[in-house]
Image 1 (tube, rainbow, N blue to C red):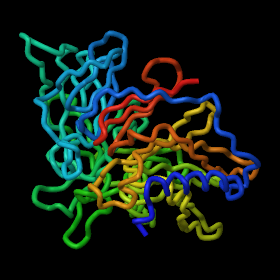
Image 2: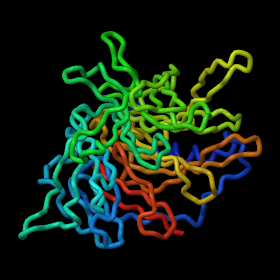
Image 3: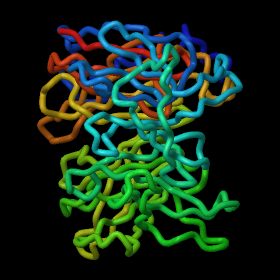
Image 4: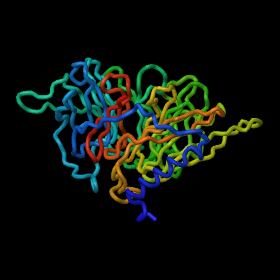
Length: 418
């Protein structure tokens, strides 16, 4: 079967899908947003990293692009080394040392630093911005590394305002040394007394016990998200095995209550959103290494209050290896849209659809009179793809959300234009 899934066949299937999409969704007409265009800018053709961030590194008023290996200075995207360069070749049989990264001023010196998630299971760290300088005495000025934690597990860590305090925290699994399958889910915050010290671990789950591993905390676990699953106004933490309920008062020391739930196969980012308009938040996720974009419908028994879940496939053979995703409003209509794409050669040529184009799509969401949302795919680019984490944000200050990605194809800025 996989031999039939050539790029030409993929294009044909995608076109056929779009023709029949209105019939499947009940929409009267599917009209692409004709005023949206995308302009791709190639910052680098080398495989540097599979995570990326944006920040005004040198405080010149322009947002730059960072991937832990280089920062690319706007507006001409001049590359500057962040650490001694490494050669990851074409990525067919190699991985990078940056799987995810986020910018934040961690030492309060006014300059954005960079949080880096290295290869799963290895230590994660933050890189200290040398106050916007790129060179010293004619040599590249590399960013100093400070360890956050000795183990970073699950391939989709989150850096979000989990507690509603206005401060982001790092959400991920971690493991005791030498125990790859006995992890713990936690969130991490900087030491308030010393920003250069290892961060403070706050348990979300209890530690695993022999024979009773905590879901989502293995070294290579797939699927992690933050969202309000039960509608109480507080953000919970999700994995494919269920979700941890944020308590009314978080003391940073007591594990949260876990609710087992069958939330699908190995995926990437997970989002809580009421897709069918019944007042219960469902879960939206994308397949990390196969084909598939899924809606996990939440049901609640009106008599007992018991919760059950049913998985629906929203898209099958459109794009595979969607190892990262965003739920954000692309066209400004007030509804969040899904943005995802192919992680090119995530495991070499072993994955389904690995030879298909490295496409990025945005899926326009439309809420119909019956309150059910349908998703309509529109191509952003066919030769760039995503990594294990990417950015959707307004990079150039025109009020439109752009796509920034770093992966085995290179480093790209894709600007939204009207």
